[in-house]
Amino acid sequence: MANRTIHFDDCLHEYLLSVSTREPELFRRLREETYAMPESSMQIAPEQGQFMQLLVELIGAKTALEVGVFTGYSALCVASALPADGRLVACDVSAEWTGIAHGYWKEAGLDSKIDLRIGPALDTLQSLRNQNPRPTFDFAFIDADKQNYDAYYELALELLRPGGLIAIDNVLWSGKVADPTEVEPDTVAIRNLNRKIAEDERVSMSLVPIGDGLTLARKR
Image (cartoon, rainbow, N blue to C red; front, top):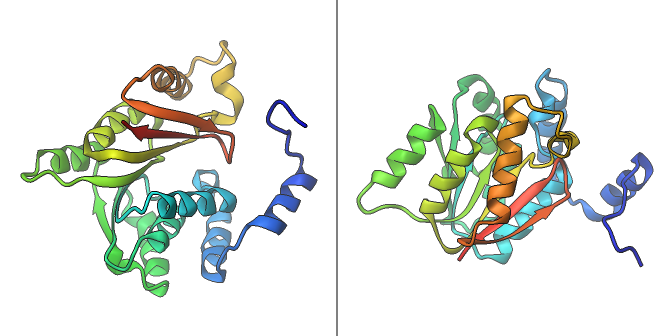
């Protein structure tokens, strides 16, 4: 029995994918198209997408929020797990990247569930917070510019219902967060948020070593 998280070499990772992922062909096509892009490292792994689908199903989410869309793979995963009357508000600044996303959402028959908001995510989240009545969300996924992670977390927490779940990507940041000599702004921002959430009594939390690290924070 292991008393710590197992190390995944390439062989074990391929085995994990072979026995656990149920990636639809359309999802695979989007992932492979994105892998050919210079920014491909911004896309989540298929096992993480499937894990997020399961989380959405487990909490019975009907409303979801996404900060950082890129080419739309994570939105595909989340929206496909929502019920027919579910809604995902997706925030991004790039019309070019989300143009790729929209084509796949439409092909999957999920575009009617996804409310894409182009513009700075902070503005979108603040606008949602200031609505009367204020909308509430069951699930939020944060995967955007790292130096605004703390602000995204705080606004998402305000918009989340009690018992709702926030998932925050890249919290291990390729291991840089554990190296005190790494002091570039993105690393410091993630490191500070990790410590903050670990001590945040407003949530129950766990940092899951999937992909580049995924923090789960359930609003109390």
